[in-house]
Length: 631
Picture 1 (spheres, helix red, strand yellow):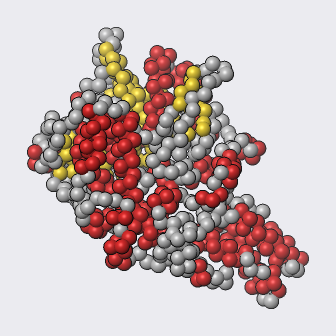
Picture 2 (spheres, helix red, strand yellow):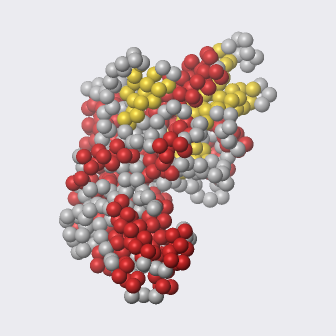
Picture 3 (cartoon, helix red, strand yellow):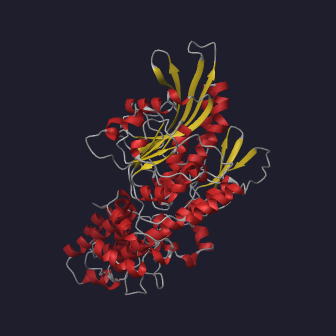
């Protein structure tokens, strides 16, 4: 019997929600159109809010239990490690070869020559950065095409439970770097230069940064045997289950953390308690797995945060020029996160060098700059990328101790070198009027010496409310594209979604636009028109289309289950009955393969229907159909 997807369920109609069953009879595509509903849909499949409490807890518990007998049998050595990391690399400097990968662990980890080259150059700061001592940063690079993506179905299920902005992008790897450069007279070069690099598909910046702080200094003293012990610890970690408090031991320290789920309310982070360990092991509670210090990153340019939000929302080409990879990578990650819970759908490179395999592609002058955010430190980029429309120049990021001075937007022609003054260089004119309140609130916080963590919370909430005010009208309109419930017939193919019409959407803004949730004035219509041409809209709308199409397929399955299929088969020929059985089997396969939002009971009921129809057929046909899989 085909088993249903873990945790799948149908969303109930939302009373009064736009596009819900209570309004015009439309099928609600997973929730209503309010702020909470938008966020739920942005995060993933909806759940019944009324079933919270025990129901939600039970579902979370089911997801958090990877230790079933079947899963244990399928766990091979290094499977647990692979759920978190692809591999660990050590990059050193060779006098003859330059930067070179010295160690890859586990030894069976596969990296192409192109991937190794990218890792080599991205794991060291540019020579002009002058990073003495220890430096941490991260980078992102393309995986080589044609490689099989091996990830077991259980871990795929975990990925589906993540908020959309934390889902893996199988086309990219992240590299988390701990670089050490210290004087060493015993070496010809006069310096010890080495990087410990964690390669992962997961965007858990804070987790891996914390992990490297724990292990890298000791690794540089103890070398490879220590690295092997670290990897063995990681191979004992539980799978990265969203919504569950996880305890991850690493060389005598236990990191406690919780990975967000799509069920979490945007802008909230459940506190992970740092409980006393009975075995006296040191315990460390991580407040987040993925967030950066937003205010610290934006402080040098925080008079322009609203304009930067628009540029990121619209997928405009952006360059961050910084003195070191730490500043460039943190600022790029802060920019990408400022439109959360929307997913930034274009490419972004927290640290980008002239040796990157995409250098020519991204710096060519034969075509318009691509939709990408680049973080760079090499002065060469000031000339190479001077044709780019939007450039952010960041100085040394320090904890702000005084109120930053008002900085005007600078003209691009004034950006000659990387030594130019910090600021935003662009000719872009924002669509929305400037929100002076958030600037005053943050300035007051600096004057009152409010902790930077508290400033980041204020800034993150501001961005969240701005993004939600912008996206809710789109959510509401797209919900209305769902067909009426009465259009779904078990004997016909599921109905199609209505086409998205830009003009029809624009007409809805007069009465149901962002003015309902935001006091900001400005050219919202112009901002929407620009957004509808952007990669971020394309990615968002494709996700909505897929979700609503799956909802229609799920409702079609329900309609089939509510029919007396055995009675139907008795009135039709054997050929028609066999055809029905094969189609129903394919429906079950599709439900599992595409993880349709179907109740477990619905799938069981459909399987029962199939069995009953087969048993009513002659013996020879029964034998064939019971053995026949699905096409």
